[in-house]
Length: 159
Image 1 (cartoon, rainbow, N blue to C red):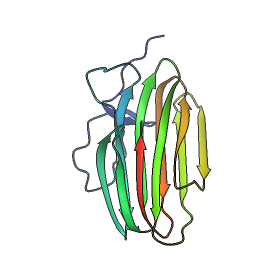
Image 2: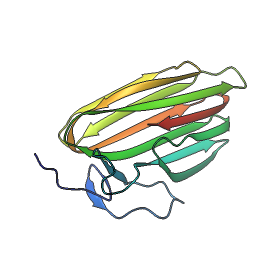
Image 3: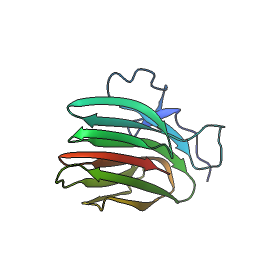
């Protein structure tokens, strides 16, 4: 089954959108990555939002890039779109250094245009890896989030 290429950016309601260049506001579309090696010579990317001490920034990250936040109630979220003719695994990696008592949280979710979805939420250990199998899809959206609780230094990466 052939998949018509979406993107270069998109969402479940808009599968073809121009790349975001202004990250001063939270994007509503995300990079569309294809699960085929180096096609079309692009590094996989995700949009991240990083909040700490009531300040939020949005930016583009490559997959495998570690995003860090620290301060009061730090939160990191990453989101990307994908297309794939077969299922594949992605790893959500995290590391948390607590400076105060904290109840951190980690979550991930995906939704496909075909209607498949799954999600996960947990109070994680200080560091770890969660492997997620994303299903084949003509268009899917994946997101992960890590919150540090009260006061913490946190790192989140997707690989």
